[in-house]
Structure formats: structure tokens, C-alpha cells
Image 1 (cartoon, rainbow, N blue to C red):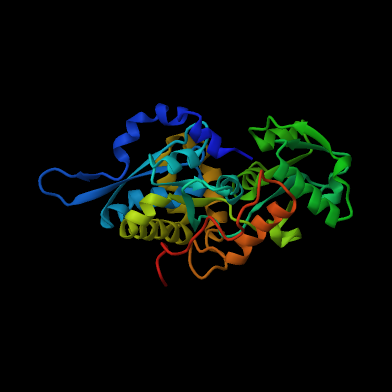
Image 2: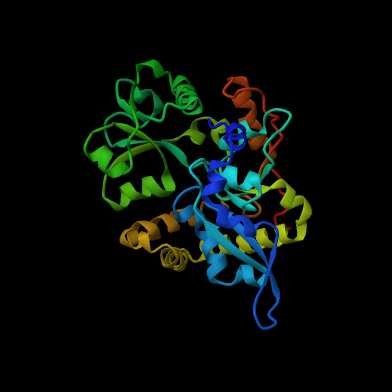
Length: 341
């Protein structure tokens, strides 16, 4: 878990690196020759552009933001993550994860960030392994090499699903993860099992023709059906600019709805915006088709949070003492800025 509060108080190194964004706060920009004023919004990613972010790029390319009176700039995250930039107010919105948010909500001075939309409705993460080697269920991890980030939440999650399957986490061989390409790591047998998000790494294995076994954590225990990834907003901006915040999320909703209905066209928009993905065009298209059914899934509308699922995961973090303190199970999210259906 990252200590976001210490990161911000430590002197704002990440902010210094992105000082050029200072003017992007709450100022409005004016287009030349009498065009309407557009509200400038900075949106910070969690990583390099990928299919989790497609709705943002669709909203830019198709003019949804401009139609909403907004000018949106997408930036890469500083070293310590999108949460730092959004909490500082240098970015108004960004991409995060429910488990990343939790530590920053603890104490008398929580980070001023709130999750305002679920990018993907259900947690698609789980464990992938080579097919036929017995790791199609959690107990099968015993005696095999697992690539670990050595994070408390990570290890507690695997231990719990293994216990539910009659397995023993202490019998797993933990290998410090250096995995950057899941397909190569599995093919080379450097490791036997990897925690992945199926929408990218799992689909990559399919595209590469690699036979795999996979189990999703949420299928084994519903407490792990938490929200990952999410869009977060700066609390001050949300409070002082509610109409612009709603307009932003309405445009983003349009973007993701387009991607759901038109995955191939959305994939092209993404690769146009991020040409570095062009060499993996087949993967981008396949991932986009997979996520077309995952963005909203069974929710009444794209982006909506289920309060019970949100609080259930935070309660699990508290019960397992995985945080430096106790997080309010109901803190850190809202559906109030999403379009009403």
C-alpha cells in the first residue's frame, strides 16, 4: 500500500516535475475569435494509455468534451501515482483503484479525493498459469512459483482464496516479480503463476495462442469484487464546480457507451491517440471487444458504484488489519455526478 499522505507532505516532488500544469487548475480558456469559453480540465492516467482509458480518448476524438463546454488534457502520472496530482488540485480527475484509495482516506486529514465512476463494473483480476499444470484452482498454486509484488493486500487475497479451496499459501514459492510480458514469462517458465487483469494480459495470452488456466478472485469470494479501475475527482473541484463535473462525466459516459457499442472503431481511436499501441493492434482490438461487455456489465448505468460491494471490501481491509489505521467503509465514493438515467 502506498502512503499517499506522506508523499504529498514530503515536498511535492511529483508536482515540481509537472509544474507546467499549474495553469490547468480551475481556470477557463478562451478560444480565439469569439468561440465559446471552454472549461480546462486535466485528466491524469494511472499508466500508459490502454483499453481501460478508451472512453476518455473517444470523448476527445468525437467531440463529446467540447460539446459539454470542456477542454480536456490527458497527462501521464507522476512517479507516485495519479492520486498525488488529483489530491493537489493540479489535475481535476484521474484514474485510480479502490485498494489504492483506501490508505489515503484514513485519519483526521484524509486525501481530498473521491471515486466518481467505475471504469469497469466488476473486478476482472485473477491468477493465470500454463494450461494443464494444476493451477486452475487456488489450491493448485501449492508448490509452484508465483510472481509476487510482496504487497500485504495481494498476499492476503491469495491466502484467503487458497484457504477457501483447501490450500495453504505458505506452500507457494514466492518469486519477486519482474514480469513485464506475461506471455513470455509463462512460456519461458520463469514463473508458473501471475496475477493479471484479464482484459489485457489474459487477452494477450489468447492472441498469442498460449493455452492457459485462469481463476478470478471475485468468482471465489465476492468480497474481492471491488472496483478497479475507477475515476477519481478532486473534492474541492467537485464541490465548487458541480455542473462542470457532471458535464465531464456525462461526456466520459458517452465515450464508454460508444466503446461498448463500437469496439473496433474505439480501438482505432485509441491507437490513433497512442500510436505506440499500433504494433499491438490485434491485442488492442481483442481487448476492446472483451471490455465492451465488462465496462457496464450488469449495472443499471456505466460508472455506477454498488455501496455494499464498496463497503464490503473496505470492511475486509479493516478486519484483516491491512491498513495503518481504520478506513470508513462508506467513504471515498459517490454516484452523485453520474448522468441520471
